[in-house]
Structure formats: C-alpha cells, structure tokens
Amino acid sequence: MDTLEKLWKNLTYGVFLIDAETQKIIHANDAACSLFDKERHDLVGKEYQQVISPFSKEEYSALDFDQQTYQQEHFITRGGQRVPILQTINPFQMEGKKYVLSTIIDISEAKSIEERIRKISHYDRLTGLKNRYFLDQLVSLEIERSNRYFYPVSLILLDLDHFKRINDRFGHDIGDEVLVETSRILENSIRKSDMTFRWGGEEFLILFPHLTVERASNIADGLRVRLMNHKFSTVGNVTASFGVTQYSRGETWNSWFKRTDDCLLQAKRHGRNMVIHQTNIAYDFIAKLPWKSNWESGHTLIDDDHRLLLEISNDLLKLMFTNSPARDIEPRINNLADHLKTHFKNEEDILQEIHFPELEGHCSLHQALLEEFAQCADMFLQKKASGNHLFSFLLGDLLMDHFLLEDAKYFSYTRKFQQE
Image (cartoon, rainbow, N blue to C red; front, side, top):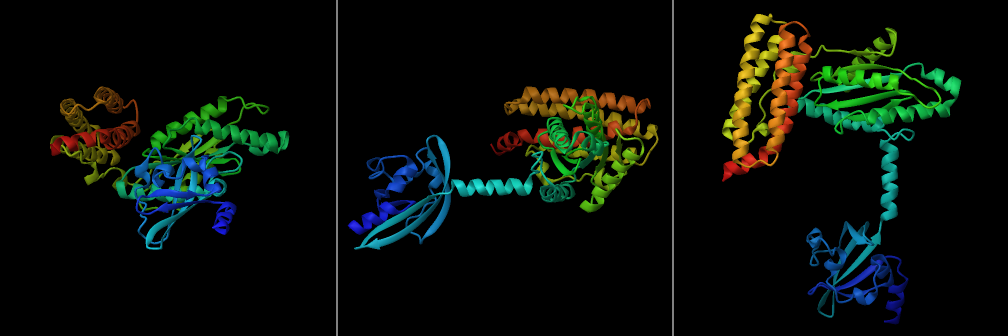
C-alpha cells in the first residue's frame, strides 16, 4: 500500500478512485487536489460528477461508468475560470466490487498552443485580419450557400494608392503602421456579418454576404471617402482604389476574383482614388428567386402572402432587368405596393395575436420599407435615378434582409401558434 501511495503521490496528473455503484470519490491524489484547488477531505466522499461540474451537472450526464475505457475533453471551473481538461475513464473490478479510475490532465497549455497555431494559420500577423488561407475556406462556403439559397454575395478588392512611395519615403515600419491603421478603419466600417481579409501587401479584400453589388459599391465609396479624409500619423492622407463585383451563379472563385481585380485595375488606370463596379450579373441568378421550404413561417396567411410577393417581385425584376418600358413596369410597381401594404397589415395583426415581443420594432421596419419603396419607385419612374436603386431595394432590403432575415425572427412563435 505504501508503494501505491508513493506512486499516486508522484503522478503529475490528477487521479480519482471512484466507487462505481455510488459514483463517489474514494481517493484523490495530490495532483487532483491541486488541479481543483481543494484539500483531499473536500473531495473524498463527494459525488464525482458534482466535483467535476458543480454548476452544470447535466454537462457530464454522458459519463458512463459501465462502459470500456474512453476519453473526453471537458472544462472544469477553478477560481472562477474555465480550465480545459482531458479526462480518461477506466472501469475495473477488484474483489468482486466495481471501481472507476479517472485521470485528469490540464490541457490549458496545449489548447493555448493550438489556438496560437490556428491564429497563425488563419490570421495575418501584422494586421490581425483574416488571411488568404482563411479566405479560401470561407469564400467556398459563401459560394455554396449563394448557389443553394439564391442570395447575393459581393466582393470589394482595394489597394492603397502609391503605397511604395510611403515605404520609400518613410520606411517600412511607418508603412506597416498605415496598413494596421487601414485595417482598423475597414473593420470598424462594416457589419459583423461582413469579413475583411488582408490579400497581400497593401491590398485588402472584403466579403459581403446578402449584399448586392450596388449596395457594396456604395459601401466602397464610403470607405474611399473615409480613408481619403483620415489623417494617418506621420504620412498624412492616403487614398485607395476599389474594385467591386457580385458573385454570378455557377462561376468559380478564380473567375469571380479576376472580375474584381479587373475592376480594381480600371480604377487605378482611370486616376486612382475611385470605385469601379461591375453589374453584368445574369438574370437567372438574381431575379428568379424560387420559394424555399425553410422560408415558411408555419402560418398559412403569411406564407401565402410571401409567395405572392415573391412572384410579383420576380416579375418586376425581370421587366427591369430586360429594360422593359416604364409603362409596363409602373403597373407592377403599383401592384407590389398594394400587396405589400396588405401583407404588412395582415402580418402585424397576426404578430399581435400571438404576442410577438418585437412587434413594435417590426412595425417600424414595415413603415420604413414602405417609405423607401415609394421613394425608390418615384425616382425611377420620374427618371431621376437608374433602376439600380429600386433593383437593390427589392432584392436586398425587401426580399433578402426583411423577408428572409427579419421575418425569420418570429417563425418560432407562428409555428408554435399553429401547432396549438
């Protein structure tokens, strides 16, 4: 027994001996006491799972003392901090009685190294932005989703103008400061769902899920102005050129990037400090949006309204994209406006009936959409603006942002109401 005690005492990882029937701790070595920051008498006699997770016992309900040896990664709480551990469960029998030997290793350092490796492989060391390797993974996912769910994805590629002059005049350290400062401006100017990457050198890339090229181009111009007006320490003002495109259904990433890079080259050739975007997206990608089963709210009236509005919107988008005369487009605009008002009223009555907690904010969104639609339609019909603004509103603001994102917030309420 003395030999066993010495062995337990010298082990550098935590060991618990557990009664398999009661699941209570019979013995704990010094390393286990140190790992949990407790005295031995505070552990012995306690239920093992209660020691492992005193605040969330259910988290470890999968532990099975009757099965063969197995390992699990978990977290324990020590000093108010979550500590990652590797836990090994070893059931055995001795003199007809069942026991479990549990070994616990603190893997904090290994996890820290793993996280550092992940950051090195996914993030640019200088700016902290996502890098090209990470881009390859994320852009593949966005292309797959865009092809499957028929939503737009846009891309901005920007290049700081005459950056070599900054390095030559002020040195590479100052040049690096400009790159870091630029990355912060970009990150602070976009949505949480958008993704910024350092493409290489003084080039940056931004990926915009659920955004049409027109809206992405407006954002690019805002970024251009912000960079132009920003006073960089030491070097003063810096400008940038931008290329903007939207993914075209079925094309490869290389093809999409080349189109974007071509737009950027045009911006540089035409004098720099400008935005060039490409709008030749095929109609069958962005205008023939099919109804998807996961868009169903579970409420018959709402779903019927949404299907009708999608059909009317598709019809209107087709007319606009094929450059049909205004006399053919105006009746469709009026038809959509009427159905939109009716639908919003129906939806608000239903949401009030089911006590949707965000009803007030949802009603405000409805009012804002009606006003924006009226303004875009009026400017288009009076030829004060091209169809791009109306097109962007219909596809982006109405169909993608509102029907597919905002409306989805009440689906759990309408589905539950229908079941009752």
